[in-house]
Amino acid sequence: MFNRKIAALAAAALALTACGSQPQAPGNDKTNALTIATTSNNQAPMQAVVEAYKKKTGLDINVTVADTAQYQTTLRTQLSSGTAPDVFTVWPGSGNPGAISILQKAGYLADLSDRPWAAKIEPGTAETMRIGGKTYGLPSKLDAIGAIYNVATLKEIGLKTPETYTELLKFCADVQAKGKVAFALGIQTDWVTQLIPYALVASTVYAADPSFNDKMTKQQARFAGSGWEAAFTKYLEMNKAGCFNTDPLGTDVTASYNLVNTGKAVGVVQVLASYSQITSTAPKDAEFGFFPLPGGDSGTNPVPRGIGVSFAVNDEAKNRVNGLGFVDWLATPEAIKVWFDTAPGIPAIQGAEVEAAPAVRAAIDIIAAGHTAPFPDSGWPNAQVQAAHFAGIQQLFSGQADAKQVLASMDEAYGAG
Image 1 (spheres, rainbow, N blue to C red):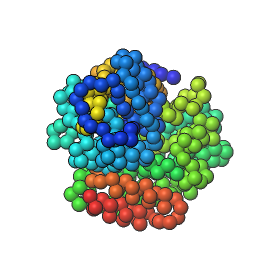
Image 2 (image 1 turned 135 degrees about the vertical axis):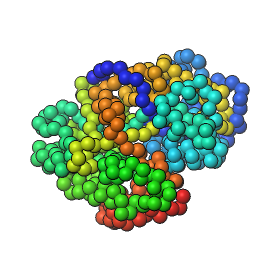
Image 3 (image 1 turned 135 degrees about the horizontal axis):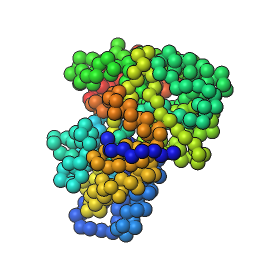
Image 4 (image 1 turned 60 degrees about the vertical axis):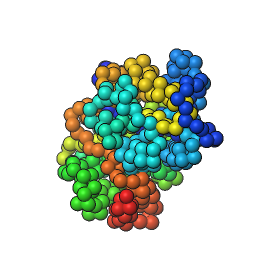
């Protein structure tokens, strides 16, 4: 299943939440304990690196796991109450409750500028972990959004992956005629609602205007009246064309993976960070591929590229020394091998080499060719925009709102920042 080695490019989306119920006092003394938390899509690689680190250090390490939405809510609550873990993950920008800008502004993050790995982060990624010239997170992995598909299912129905939006709609109809669905969609899980719009705006917004996020910041552009409206229209058009399973609002993310692994759906539009979770319940001989979701008919389809797994240290950590040591170790070749052997992906530390699964290699090749767009929320000023987006997509699919109304609510939330 794995092929050639790759040099590291960037980071992906590991989320760490909190543990403990009693407020903890910060400490610089070495202890025998370490608390960590992670999102469910990173459970397997986190377990692997923790087991390796336990053998190396003898530390008593407590790891908790939660879905992304629960993690983000819990993390903020625990940080404000002094019960957060020693190590947790952050996202770049300020687009969600676990984003660096939001957490650093509140004083929750330890300055990691002097750590031995800080100068080894892949250029273009390092800046996303900095505020005011200081580094507050270790980006471990690059992320991308696209269609992760079951090669055997595609071969079974005798179709090719689409290269234009027009071909995409025909692909959906042809797959449906074979008794399957093109893409499993589980938008009962709120964070999944954003993935297809993000994939589509790579073409409908950023292909024509790479500076769109800067224009939004300068109040020279809005969601309403932009390529976002075309993306939302196409999202609904895809649904009407039978691209998705029935009742996506009643399907959660885990059920969507099951549809792919049982051959009922060809693929799922997801972050590459979810690859290991998708494949963890697939047959052992299953092979997966990756292609960009076409948002237009140009034939060149960019993928959203951003940071996925990123680690931070609680500035008030009770086990601060151990937290810093663990994050330092995660940047070493030994830990990188353990992590990426368990969860294939693209490391962010320069010089790291890992084996690339075919699906990961396909994403790497697209990125290397320069066919990329940003994760839109990396430029958003607050977490309210993302919340408005999540709720708005669910309202679109339930018929409670139209695209213009959802975009107006996102513009209102953006202005609140």
